[in-house]
Image (cartoon, rainbow over all chains, first blue to last red; front, side, top):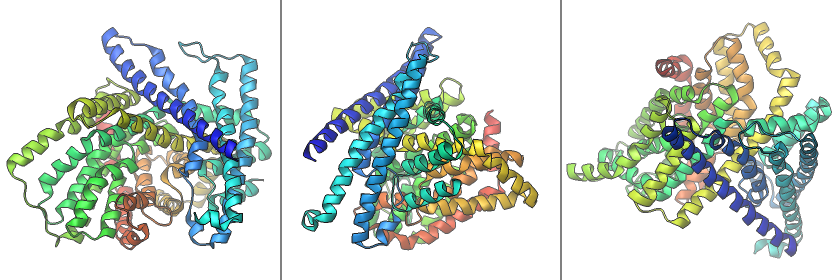
Length: 168
Length: 422
């Protein structure tokens, strides 16, 4: 559990660093796109095309860290209506659902990436980027989500079994 | 299979499974098992939706908003609004609504607007005798202006879903946004007319506050001017707004630090991931809708029923109110707008009118418990119990419904300006 927690902390820092870098690149690329268009008269298409293909690498790797932070949008009204014991079981079930779903999506994403890898398709951009490179963010994101959700499942089981630990 | 997918989604929704997973599980079950579609189709459509160029403006406007919050622009705006109207009865409340309207005009994030303006205004208002529940609910409700006053992320999402140009959707929200702003001011005057205003600012103080706020005040002009003059795409204008926010923070106001910039980037990344995760899996649902032809079936049901346009608008209002009570506005967009848009087109109505009516009713969900992220955020700003604010909610919901009905019967408020700017 401790190893998993350390690994996830590392992955969280990595995912956030990547996402922050992508946001910075997006701001700079599109600002430069506008500026260069007025200086050169034509501008560079790749500055416009780069941000959309980067956004996938911003979103999917962050799914796991945000799940752990509890910041994903979810409906919370049931937790206030049921007892704390029931809530504990709901939490285990919710985390387990996230884990199973992330494994299914990982497998689906991996297969789709392999398909595009075999097809060897390139993006219709000025930059020659293989299309599978973008699709790879999907399985990567969901494997990270699986790691975070299994950590949270184990944690919620431990919390449910050990009231003292829960209170602290 | 569809019934099973729907039931499972409902159960997962109720037990607090994140909504992006609920969309993903339910829709993929219907698509893969029910329709025998390959995963690659779902994933391809999902990536197609995520990489739409227009959506790139969403994180960029969020970045601009967070940078302006940390860079001192929000403080100057609020101070300027306070010097202008703070001495009126209920003046601080009015100043908060006006600041929220202005900040919303370049922020792009409802929660950032609540935090930015609320952090400065709410403690002041409470100190001056405004009831805490009213202050919290007002802050949450005034943030709805963000969904209408351009540039708003709601407009960008709507454009991404309906292929209406963003410039048109931005223009459509302008007049309804101003009407909502005046309604909010009327609520403040009605509820707080007995609360004395602050000491009247002198002409000199106003001039200084105005001068300090000029860089922030011209931001909407840069954004919208760039778009409507045909100089910038919406995404580019959002990026320029971000750069302008950095210049203000680092050079003009000198309140933004490198650590602050990193926090802005981190907040932007987190908010973007939350919104885009829903977009990624909600498009699975759009695949199911396309293959099952559900929108067409609903349209033919409406036609056979002989239902008129007003029946549709009131059905939409009811659906948005119910969904908005339990789900936040972004998932409601992706759950309903594709169907509503198909019906609106079949009834020869304007999609911009749909945008304004939809936002009016779905936005009310921001303040209706149990899922009212606006109230939770505003209460969090002053560290108050959000449930205490619930008693003020009915008044604002009533105003919201009145406003929504007004928008149903006044389509020109949404269509006049876009036609003028076309």
